[in-house]
Length: 201
Image (cartoon, rainbow, N blue to C red; front, side):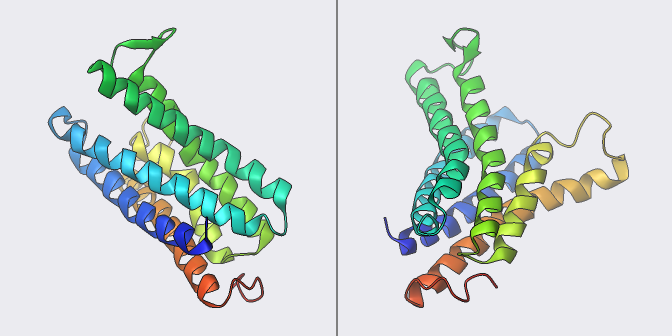
């Protein structure tokens, strides 16, 4: 897979994650609109998996062990999330138990969370390899740190109520922006001939 494909997939995935996160915040648990958000999550997950593979193949030229270790968790999480989505589609029941006490919805959710958190590990590996923009990698790492509590509404009283809207807004913007920025960095590097020099700006 080429760096260009990975770059385009990262940009597309980032835009789709923005749609998902913004729609989830606006929807506020309304099941009537959840179906289309779920469909966008599936497409965003596929785009992110393609981005992970494409960008990792490029970065692994310098640090293969570090790069592929960092991609293993988000990639595995993405695959599990897709399997959960397939189980929901096949059974037609998101609450039907698939493995032990885990329903298709629970499997998809656990996989999705692993992919989101794992994206932060991938971002840290990207920061370390300096093969793509370190600013973009830092943005993705911060976004991955905030996106999970952002999806849950920063509940539990851990965050003062006055800061909850700001936290949710940050989680909606930073994670997608990190992927888009990494994608743009990859496309710029590809146009420059795939050189590692100057890609760590």
